[in-house]
Image 1 (cartoon, rainbow, N blue to C red):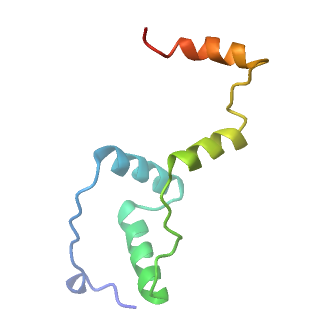
Image 2 (cartoon, rainbow, N blue to C red):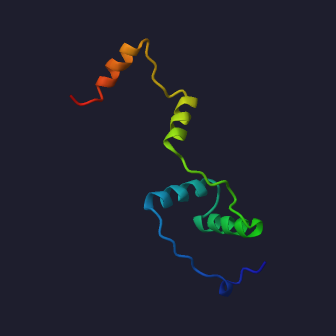
Image 3 (cartoon, helix red, strand yellow):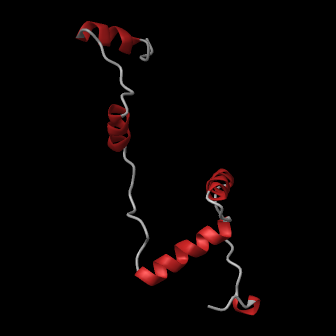
Length: 92
């Protein structure tokens, strides 16, 4: 494959600044530039004619299940204890 500069083009994409900065750090840890990572993504998409990952939407239910699976839950000895704790979050 030729790396002739005349056969390259610029791709301008607007993304959230924090997302870009975080991605830069992640790919730097992998020894990649953001440009190289995007090129890899595009090449894999073209070769496979599909996305190189399964898209997903994270719902509130997914987040709740993740919290449960990670042990990040509160427990109460009784319904009364739960109701008392809940009152802290309800405005009078």
